[in-house]
Picture: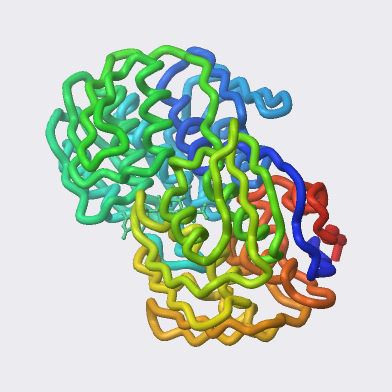
Amino acid sequence: MDKFVIHGGKPLRGKVRVNGSKNSALPILIATLLTDETCVIDNVPNLRDIRTTYKLLEELGKKITVKGKTVRIEYHRKLKTKAPYDLVKQMRASILVAGPLLARFGKARVSLPGGCAIGLRPIDIHSKAFEALGAETANAGGDLLYTAKKIRSGKVTFRFASVGATENVMTLAAATPGEITIENAAREPEIEDLADFLNKMGATVTGAGTRRIRIRGAETLAGVRHTVIADRIETGTLLLACGATGGKLTLAGAVPDHLEAVIESLKKSGAEVKTVKGGLEICAPLRPRPVSIRTKVHPGFPTDLQAPWMAYMCRAKGKSRVNESIFERRYLHAAELGRLGARIRVDGPNAVVDGVPILQGATIMASDIRAGAALIIAGLSAQGVTEIHRVYHIDRGYERIERKLRSVGARIRRVAA
Ligand code: EPZ
């Protein structure tokens, strides 16, 4: 298992291009199950969860050809309707196969995705929505079995604006004649990107990006070409890595509108963030002012940047607060940051970060994708050497991030541990 070795204390300087969005590419790749025609997706990042998705699509019956950041998904054989445990356990987003399979074949068998480091991750909102539209759910040997003689038109109202459940109902509805409405839908940019893809295929999706999404489905959907939007979480991670090192970065391909809450908090902390042609530019002070955050559904502060933000606040000139309102235990990074000398107190969904002038390098361990990103940020801003173990968590959501950081001056290398 690889580890990262970081010699911290050096400001990041230069220009990097952000990748395509993992959390947009995953639902769009899975939505190609809606058609037997060929789809070509561009700007797809090369990272573990994407490769797991290819394996899942091949297991179900698709032929996948990857050339750089372009992926071709073709018909290979009649689709299976079961997503196997060994793939689902690696990636919870596998549950997104349910929408397309249920719509086309009236059944989908998905191994119950387990919890993960950040929470129990139930899928009750997905199941209740499917049932409201005519499906039945059953548990069979650790698998979830969705069946439906006919998916009916109608309205589903989410108790919480779940991203995955929104995506699952959108794909179910896209291949179902009639109209399905989602109330209290997720409003993330990735939802809008999926809607664009489904509209190109021949569905009629309106309202994506708002709380109410209407989908008029079609009997058959066409194979199309689509370019995935930029990764706003990678963008935010790079902005915070620059902020934590007092550097100056230009992020080519970044979309400012996707990160308004984060940019506002960065500006409050004393960083200069501005929109430049084709991207974003940040110029950060040596130490930030303390700024408290509360994670919310989009367009609020994204939960996926809570850990990176906490790392940025470790050397702030004062006390800041974090409230994590989306996941029930997304603070595993706090203890690891404490090993570098950060002063963080966690109490349930709240954390208080007492900024210190200096962090000292140490050996620490990643527990999930974004906690791992937070450890990199803290290591870059610490004095001395930081070793980060279990880098495979980070590789799930970031494409060779050490190369991107090295290209703007970071002293970071990957070592086979
Ligand atoms: C997506 O996960 C993202 N993953 C997550 O990013 C992100 O953290 C999350 O949205 C929130 O923005 C992908 O897009 C692949 P949710 P998802 O359904 O769809 C609870 C990363 O690091 N919930 O909006 O699973 C759930 O437990 C990953 O890239 C239910 O209770 O998120 C959580 O507390 C991590 N019942 C909250 O809602 C349900 O049926 C948010 O979940 C579904 C969700």
